[in-house]
Image (cartoon, rainbow, N blue to C red; front, side, top):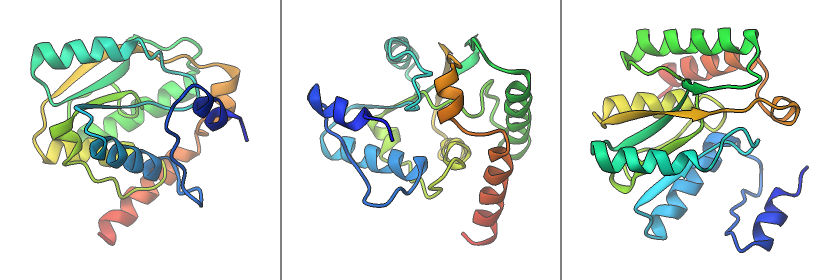
Length: 186
């Protein structure tokens, strides 16, 4: 276990925790609900493994303001992804193909954790996938709700730490299984 929450509290951040680790999807839903209750007008999500540059959020905010979109999604394929392995690139491309075929959403990056929502969009999102399938679930909801999306180039850095902390390539099969189970048992 790292000391992220302890360090965040030390600089004045509000730290939310589940008594039992429910997974990334549940953590994001809890964070969105907290931000909405606190009156946030914009809500950002990003992975905790240090891959994302918080400065990219400023570019995403500008894009939302200029385009009028409801959601800004980061794209490492419009930006850059130093350290991205060929195997991970292949899995991400397959996920993108699956998403385009099943949802008809023409994104360039299917599973980027860097997102910025307007309050009105965040109020409509309901994540039920506790684990990693939440990303596909969110994209499906964005499409089903007719939310306007802007993709923004971003940097996703793959370091030894992020690769160790992040998802294994075999996790792609778990995501597909979780999504299939949700379709069978809504």
